[in-house]
Length: 431
Image (spheres, one colour):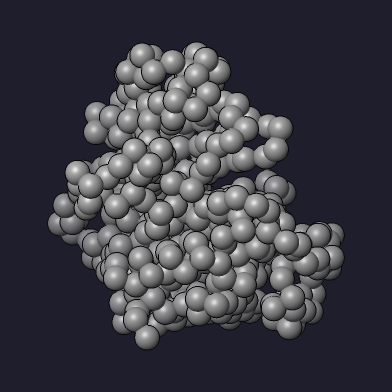
C-alpha cells in the first residue's frame, strides 16, 4: 500500500503540479490510463477551489492499493455547489460554441465525476467540503482455462482459501458459468486475488480427492457489520448438497472465530441449502434470468437501533421489522435541506442494471430522481435499483421521489451500512 498526503494553496497556476503529483503516485497501482483519469479528476476539483476560494488550502490524501486508488480531498468553501456531480445534471456539450460562461461553472465537477469509478461527498455547515474519488485498476482479459472440467464426485476437504486458490476458483467459475450470473467481484480472477491479498475479501475452498477445486464460498465485509456472501458454488459432478453444506459450515466457523460480524447477507439466483437463511425478499435479475433471492442469517443478538424512513413506507417498514424481529426506533425524516441533491450511479453493464445511491440530500431530491430515471431509460440498464442507508436520516428524503418514479421497496438488510439498508427497485424499460 502506498500513501501520499499533500496540502497546497489553491492557485490556478498550481493545478498542473497537483495533477502530475497524483498521477505519479497512482500509476504503479492502477496503470497510466487510470492514473491519468484520477489525476484529471483531482486537478479539476483543485481548479474549482482555486476559482471559487483562491488561496485556501486544499488537502489531498491518496491511498494506493493493488486494485484501487482512493483520493480524499478537503477544502473550505461555504458556498460550494455540488450539483454537477450528478450524472443527469451535466452540461449539454452538444451545444458546442453556443455554450456561454454561465454554463461553465460546473464543468470541473462534471469532468471529475465522470473520470472516476466511485465518489462520495460530505457537505456540512461549518465543516470543510470533503470529496472522495476512487479509481479501479483495469485488468486485461484472461483466456478461458483449457481444462475446466468439474471435480469428480466424492468426499471433499474444506479450508480457508489463499489468494492463489481463490484466484483459480474464479477462473473456473468464469469458464463454467455465464458472466452475467457472477457478481462483479468474481468476474476477473486477478482483480479478486488483489482484493484478497489486501484483506478486502476472503473465502473457503472445497478440494476433491483428485486435487481439483470442488467448490468455494467467498465474502466481503462492508462498512456495516454484515458480511456479503458469494456462493456457495459447487464445481463437482453429482449431488451438490453435501459440498454446499460443508462450505457454509466452514464459513460459519471462520466468522465464529473472528466474532466481528453480526450477520450474513446473500443475493442469489440459485437454490441455497434449506434451513440456513431467512428470506428477505427478491430482486429482478434482468437479461432473462430468474429473480434473485435476498437471504439473511443472524450471527449475533440484534441490540436495536434508530432508523429513518418516510410515512409513505410505514406499512412496509412495520411489517418488515416485525417479520425480522428487529428492535428499531423508526423515525420520520423532516423537510429536506435547501440546496442541490446528489445521486451516485453504479452501472453493471454485464448484468444489465444500474444502482442509485444517495450522496447528498436536497430540496430537489424528487426532481433529481426523475431526471436520472429519464436518462437511464434509454441506457443499457434493464432494471434500476436504489439503495438507501436508513442510518443516515437524509437518505430517506429520496423516498417520495423514488416511489413517484415507480420504485418499490423490496427488502431491508439489517445493519448492512451505518444503519439498515433499504433496497428498492423499478423496471427501467419504458412503460
